Length: 325
Image (cartoon, rainbow, N blue to C red; front, side):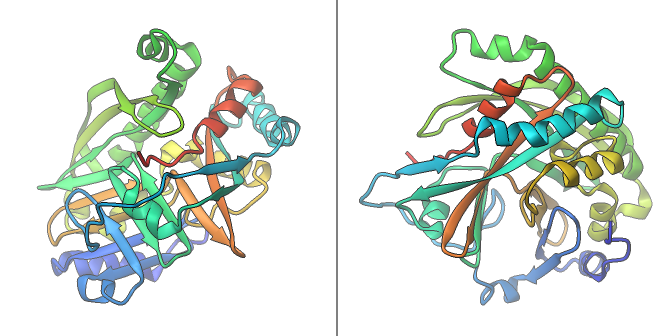
């Protein structure tokens, strides 16, 4: 990756050591690192809605119901990339690969309306170029302790005993174990006393199209002295996020770049708010991008050697939703 010494990470270190609050955004390939102090956010065209930081006024009412049409690629088109991933899994080049697609959508909501009326833990509108409504925390830092909450494995909540099925599904479990293991290893590079605090928690995600259950865990550790107060160094070591890449990271990245037919850009990158002391950051998933006046929804899922084409194709389509009620 070209990110070895991106000046953006260095600047993040400087600002965090000076305890200056800032918002940052890093694309998937770590080639674009953008930083905004509170002052710079005012004219940035960025709207942010995080648990601990908002720079947008609440809009309560809209007099229309969201309509969303998607035009996914055919199963045969999907199969091309899926087969590349499976071939590499069989060869032992990867044991989990996150394979994603770009789907054209049509909706009667603007990107700004989607930002204001979607419900999610993390929401960002980037200059009328893209919007996302992500449920997934990347890392949180509080009092030199670091936390991550890998989210892997989803199921249609309408299925009978859905939560139990998800918890015991061999493929979903394998995927979840792999990501927990990967992130535990990642955290060990920057933290001591790394431990899994909570394993396979099931969360309910409500959407207009269909409700989902998602599986997540919590891992924590105490930041090593050389990473304390250095948000840039910490991010540069941890990125790209393991949950949306796979394992092992370097080889799996090569597989993704071969299998996927588009550039992810900021999708599956990371953004975060540093308040001068603590950090909250998220993985940029559930992502809609505007390109030449058309809208595209980017979605996908983790593929293991146990994955079935029909199920993975369906999961990629299931994730095309906007949580507006």
